[in-house]
Length: 500
Image (tube, one colour):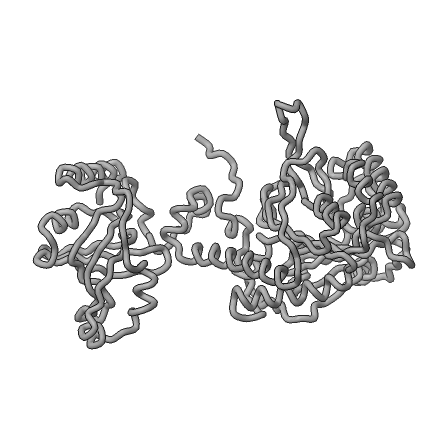
């Protein structure tokens, strides 16, 4: 079998031979009547007799995935990425130069063909070519097993190879596009206005996360890639836009895992005169409709499970859920006060083996304990609601419990999918929360929120009661396509540099 250098040299020799024939190696265009997928979809089910009687003429193009030579005849398999079509090249049916071109083709080359459709003796749907046009040379051999590229590193680093040889990969990204379209359709139908807000911000706000920092030289100022669009979207509520949404990138300077990529896509939407309870109902309806449009049903496979997006979803209040699971694991009753008192919360975390930081208050400790105890087992869609105020600086407190905010997170597949709350619109309370976040920041919490005076000023102009939510689009696509890593649903995920 030829070695890699020989294969490369052979391909270049074939390209040079094509040039000697006067072939345009990289033509500017090619007019076709059908894509391969259109031909297969429209005519692929027709019988031999139907194709013979109708004699359907077509011009199409694609990448060569297979070549079989039989002296005076060749068979090619070409693909447009969605479907494949066999092409029959017969010496006495082609112009002389076209057949010479056919003998110089390599796997991976792009060609255009014209001819009529028929079925071979083995009943293979085929195009009998009357002309062949060379369109582009593949100078580097495709992976040997073009029907399946298994090397994960290559799939992520060279996504174009993954798309060429793995049809399932293309289907994932088609599903991603369908998911975005379905989310937009759902919100547009309910009177939401799609907007765009700054991705470079003077302050990194709207979430508790470490930002990426850059510098604007002309203005000599530090800027942050946004960690969330939230504070700008809520400024629009102040301005009278009652229902707004944005689908765009967020950036968080955090680790990379099967669920995290530093650059990711979020849907955030805000609705005036609403609250977190109304958003729970709306979220159930939205996800069930999106699942139906993207997958054809409201149940989807995910690993060893079948996830049901059919409403209603399970609902858990955070502190009672912590007490329930901690009681089961420790073999003693755990009371809710142990989630509210600092020393008791620290003792509970130690007893459960949950690592915590010295600067954490009881609310942050409770949230850490919840994630450790519950997150892996929340496979079916589940709302976790009523969070400690300490971990929710932008949420409205419950009227009957100032230590608790009206917030929920939606979990599915064992990870967080969405985060929502009744929006805090009291400027004095918002300032107090920002000041508390500054104290946490001074205590070493790099993810604590910064003071945003301009946002407080916006609230002082009056913001109506509202509910807002963020949905992780990448994670939603993971669930809808049975993908176990976020890198499988992002075309070009961030990768470590290759080691030389």
